[in-house]
Length: 132
Image (tube, rainbow, N blue to C red; front, side, top):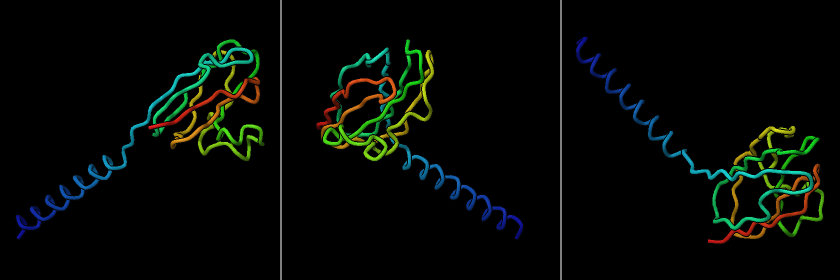
C-alpha cells in the first residue's frame, strides 16, 4: 500500500513538474534588443527598418547634461500629445541620466510606420519602418 501511494505521489509530482516546464516554454517569447544612444538633440541611429515582432529598446544617454527618455508613436500621431499616443511599453522605465542606460518595456511592432524620439532632449522624430 505504501509503495503504491509513493508511486502515485512520484507520478503526480513528475506530471506537475513537466507541465510547468512546458507552460514556461510556451510562454517564452523572442525579444530583440535594439541599442540606441542619445547626444544633445539627436540619436546615434537616424532610423530603423525592422520586421514585425517584439522589441525592447536599450537607450544610453551619452553626453546630454539632463535626463532624457525615449518613446515610440505611430507616424501619423507624431504631432500629437506623446502621453496619449505612445505605444504601450515604449517609454523607458525611468529617466536616463548622463552616462546611464535604461530599457523600455517589450514593444510589439506590427507592419506599419512609426517614429521614435525623446521629447525631453528634444530630438527629431526618427522613422521606424516595419515590414515583413
